[in-house]
Amino acid sequence: MRPPPPPGDPIPALTVTPTPTQLFAFSAATHNAHRIHYDRPWAVDVEGHPDLVIHGPLQAAILTRAVLDWAGPTGRLHRLTFQHRGSAYAGDTLHCTGTVTAARPTAVDLALAITNSRDEVLLPATATVVFPTW
Image 1 (cartoon, helix red, strand yellow):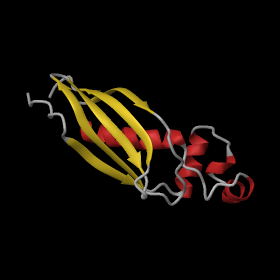
Image 2 (image 1 turned 90 degrees about the horizontal axis):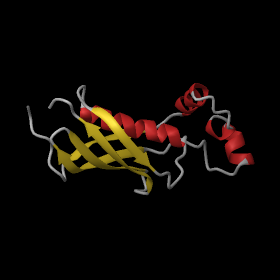
Image 3 (image 1 turned 30 degrees about the vertical axis):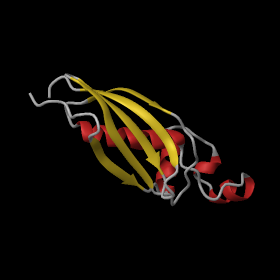
Image 4 (image 1 turned 180 degrees about the horizontal axis):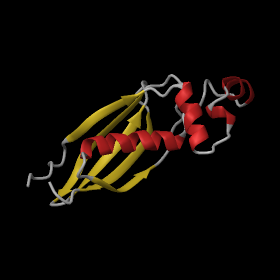
């Protein structure tokens, strides 16, 4: 049984640039008909956004992927909390980062964030990952 990682240890960063095709597919999969996610002229000309808007739930899914990639096959995401603090647009590169904040024999707490290329925090988060076996 390996010991849990100590507080301060980073998780591997995940960098993703969602494409318009991914935004369309995510809208379809989640039954989200809001045109700001897949219709650029509507998003820009009607609603005044600089480009297609990356869904908040898609950002949360990307952050979940970063945590689960780090946790590996034995880790289970027990809790994830997040807050949307900024908008992301098509062409933005999202950087997912995290740090271990507490470690117990079978669980680890993480502080997480998604930032954009301008280093603005778009989505701060916390998570608890349970490891039944290390």
